[in-house]
Length: 320
Image (cartoon, rainbow, N blue to C red):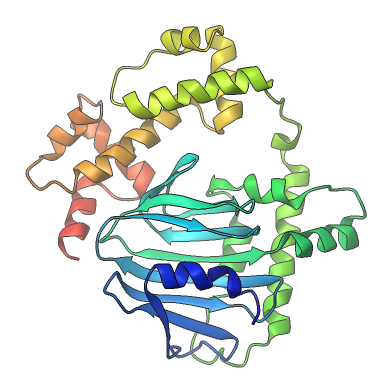
């Protein structure tokens, strides 16, 4: 049956059923559409092997949806051209125009995906077995775990080679004859790009936190998630973590991959997305509700985080 087995339960749970493939999608592909009105559009899957697959999201949810899926162990990297939502465990904002790495760890995925905003994404998925065999064949013990390479891709914009590779996988009219060998070659090429990037990245040699320091930072992160609209001071947060301000800022960056300011701005933008769905709230009121006294400053941060001004975001929702 191939790698599609990973997705059978999630597709059924979401009310998707197989439909006729659009032009360009050859016999290696299966296309699915919602039969329940849950979403408009398609989910496409190329899964001719039990070792890898290519998934394309091209749909819009009718309303906000809290999604929770149990998944077997696999790794993926996905380019999100458009999306609005949050992964909840652990929390991270799902941002458009960004690459995301994921490792299921025989667990699952839980998150909130906002309705009315198109989900346009393309990604590759591989089994741990395939990644292990690739590392043994290509690197002969020089690189131990490709999982670290996938997880290091977190909201990245500066990986043009991977973005171009993923874009080349989207079928267009005339591509129906592309073979399994072609697609598998692209999957292996993506693995190579990931490993080489990780091997040469300065993050690879980054200092690790002690378990106690990591636990303290995670506690502060949970507090920030609940109080992001407040005026959060480094001195207060450092005191809560039992650290000096300097150590706290560096430890926070190591644990989250973001500076404190960037993390708070991202959390506030996520809060604002929900509030902008309330038509009785002005943009200035939304800005104040998420912690900004200046609506102009709020608009700049929101645009940087989502790719749209608050007014554009609200307008797009109104036309769907």
